[in-house]
Image (cartoon, rainbow, N blue to C red; front, side):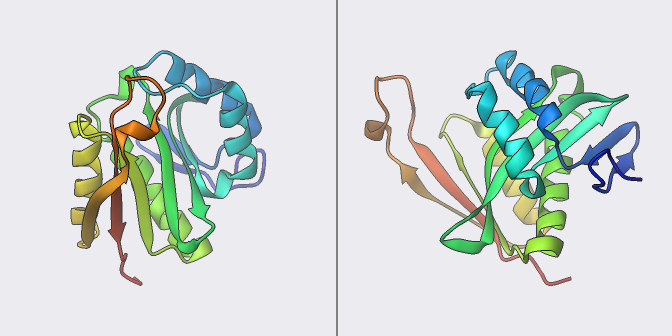
Length: 174
């Protein structure tokens, strides 16, 4: 099956996993706006869906967006996909959707771009995301290296924690 843009669509249970289109950007923004995630401009979500669709995944149920992951290939590390943000609708929480989105991203970028690593930044208090990335490393039986990426003094104001870098990989060639 293909979506309107000709991209493959994988259906699992009642969910479909596919590359986003620019039309998905507004729904991605709405999902984040109604969550505790850092909200970026609506333009960011539209741009990511349009120009970085190969490194982004959307999950839909009955045609409605219920989750997404946005990412891009790091310019200095062409074998690494950087995960910018993962959003899951409250109706899907606790069902493993974030894990499934990451697995789709890893598998697609391994095939299409030769990605061997996944990186992301996570605040020290975000234990759920830390557990998610550690689980991804266990799933692929690979390393998960954690180091400081951005100290809190880099952020304006006093409302942002430091960001830890999670580097997962290498992924096996299979």
